[in-house]
Length: 425
Image 1: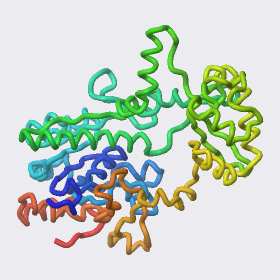
Image 2: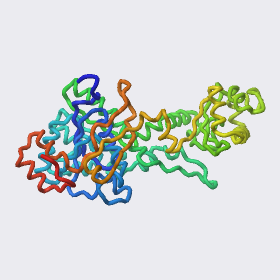
Image 3: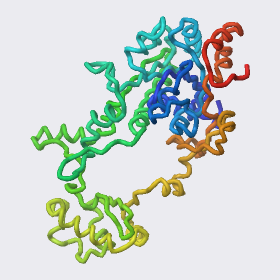
Image 4: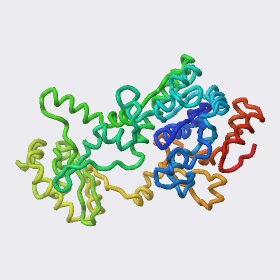
């Protein structure tokens, strides 16, 4: 492999996944150069749950389910019925040629699937070279092993992330609702890191490993600072690390404010390091030695007074006017961007990628498909998506031939498994 190729070129991944976290993990591996073989069910009303999550009982074409395109580019689609021994034997051939197996189906379902079972332990026993990966809601030890888990429950609510970001509303404390895909994509990043580490180990030893992560564990790691702080505070009976609440923040310089043109403005100067500079730039009417706000402790005690002063001051100018001032005084800030802002943001442009269109996309009149790039570039090169999102089953014949099935075996499998369009053999 030369440096002009993506770093995972030559790695083959067998994906048996639904919804978001699993396909996102294998999708990232595909972005980094791996060959992804996506196993799909015959006659499925939706592709892995993606369309149905949006209430659309159709195959995930671009207009129906653009989120499917985000996580399933650069893949080959193979339709197999894993309740059928013939198809399971074909899948075994695929696994024998794969470096990574990844699934986010529940452990109990994998254990009983087909005549062989597809938990990571079962797969690794039959294919000792493979990196067998399982992604779950809550983990595989404890009372909730087979409890269904989604990002809102496992990643957000159970990890304390929702609690940490709770705010006041009509006198009560409510946690916000997490945006779609946030926890799934964070968990996918965790899985990819573990898979790459296990691939290195497998290359050194010739032996595969089991890689396991969950929405809960990814959420806990994301929340690690607050959880660790809570353990430390409890040692001195100081209580838990409290949730972020705009009305009760310890540092009034760290918060969200409005400007004259109603743009939200996130300012975050270090309360001690930037205090005098902040007062000068904001023209607060007092210097940094005002006794009410002289130290971080003073500012915490008089938080509500200082917050009101900052609010009133920021409302006297537009965001654009404050931006010039904050840049002049080298203060940290950021406008809370809308999607329009992000799309036009010059710093964000490397983060978008155009996906090549499949023949189905072209037939349906899709003119352009833009999604978000992987979060990592290599050698300073902007990411380019190699292949379109596959038509269901389009690569079945190609992949099965590659792993050693003969033409008669391929035709038997394809004849009983319905696909959206007949691929060229």
